[in-house]
Length: 489
Image (tube, rainbow, N blue to C red; front, side, top):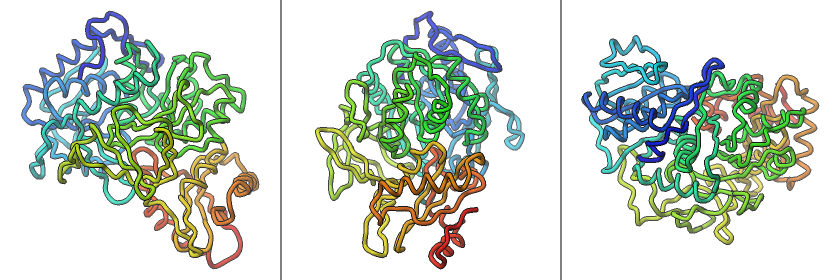
């Protein structure tokens, strides 16, 4: 995948580790890619799974897999051992690459040091069963798995580059400076945060997730995130809604976002236009987009020159769309198929499972088809509707709404300890005033700690696993419909 100028002597990657900065030119980056590709070519097996922190080594290995004609299977660093083993079993990986020694895997079959600072340990794996890949598969990314186990989405190099090029054309920022805030194992950051900026002759800044304030999948030290943004002075960022809420909170408390910021994409879940408007009023140039792994990450996007704050933006030019019974269907250069399933026909429409309205090529996301709540009064409510409004309040960091077959809606809420129950209650009441009675949250349960990936309550991209959450708090929900009082714990 040729997504940058391999001859440039200008920095294409800037790594930040322990307050030290390392600038890597296009020539140096390409040399390291070729060096690692030769090592991979000398090893048996066609599938390389890797679990690395955000670093130049991650980017090098990602590119080297393509050069060595190996299938890349990136695994998010915060995946626990059980999740990692599930991915390895599903993809039948022959090689596993880590930036830390893995004693349980024995002695590495090879190790290599990149940029004199980053050592990769490569292990031979014995696949539990042989896996057949679709012709042209270059990367396998595992979907969020909001219900059941995640599926491996097989992507070609061309489909990934098509999205990256469409984003370059649509965002239209020359020589952008991008700071990666999401794990590189998340497809959105991989394609929109690395490939697209480099195709626009830009520079990508990377630093370990712990230095951005992350512990596992959760942002535990948000001041570090703000400090990183201040240090890099980026032009572009990619956020999930929770990170957007964090930035808005700091801006409300007096933080001045860098004037360098030109474009902040937010995706991963439905975002309230109220929160986007608030962010923009605080000098955070936020634009909502929509996508899914099966489309190689992005389907539609708002930009400064094509913006509708009520929407998820206009559809990228290489994708066709249609709406049937309220559900979005897409067609084009999409995924090749799910691993260990039937191939996806390029001429067939793919059902996204998302409830959408479309006007003048612009998408208005209403929620997930499977998250449509039908109350006992026969009212239809997309769970994402009240959730997105609840999350527009900067003091509410997580909100998951339930009420299938029940007389009213309920929710589990996570807010910082510094936010009192009374203030949370006021926020919820204010949101309820914006909703019809059947869509209001009548009772809620306050969480003592945030929902996490490690507990199996969130997907890899921080979407709630509703069935698991409902099961965990079933006793609480039973109380909601037996007693009149609100349960806050």
